[in-house]
Image (cartoon, rainbow, N blue to C red; front, side, top):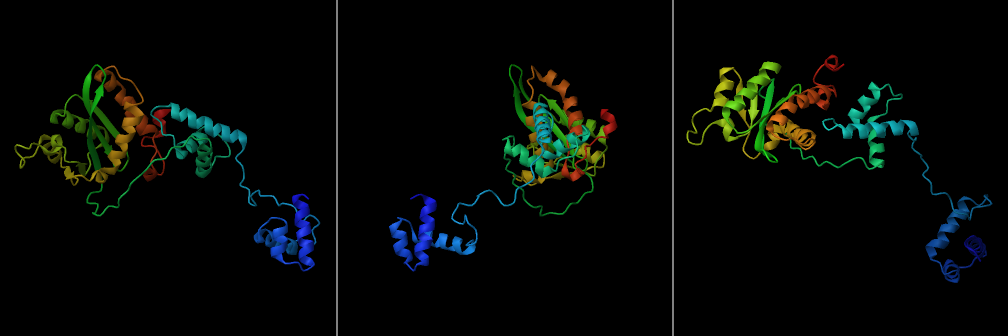
Length: 301
């Protein structure tokens, strides 16, 4: 007796008044099994195939992404991944689809689902803490000193990184030492291009604040900023999230520039810095900017 015949026989014996426990024992089944098929019979007694298995396919089937569109999304994703300086998220893919005239333009969730399905996504752990102090200035630049980093056969270097918290325009300058002269020159170069902010925010790096020997004297960086009417903000010690925008940019700088290329020496690295700055300011998109780039598109025809 096969499974289908067992189910029909069990119901026939139940209808004749036989006890459920006896039916279950005779077929070497559980009482739950007997009750299941009794309920099925009561629900579908008029159906001739009530004893057959029902399809386990989902009742609500999501609309599948068109195969051709899916291939285009995956191709764009891989092209962006191969572009060492580019962002590779769903927003960037969506803008690239629009630029190429692909119709219909896929939703962000569709792009995320597709790249996850093909294993092209990666998990990023983001730890955010709420701000518990007021915003004192309208326009702020954040600055950080990255390093030391090393070039094989050429030695160590540092990078002076600055970013405008309003527009997210950036500036980077590789230097051999943490000299205050080099830091001031980098700040001046950034301000000459992007204008001076209300405040310059940074951590308590010794090269920024001055000297341990003369702790009550202003260092060159502080004196230069104040001479230009720019206020100085030092974030609390051991609280890097206060400088969250520049810290996130440092990650981009590390992975989309330093690790993406091989440099023979500091001079070759310095020669490529402007290309990175231009690419970031012209191509990278931030949610705070409405996913728009920092520079006008006409600069990149």
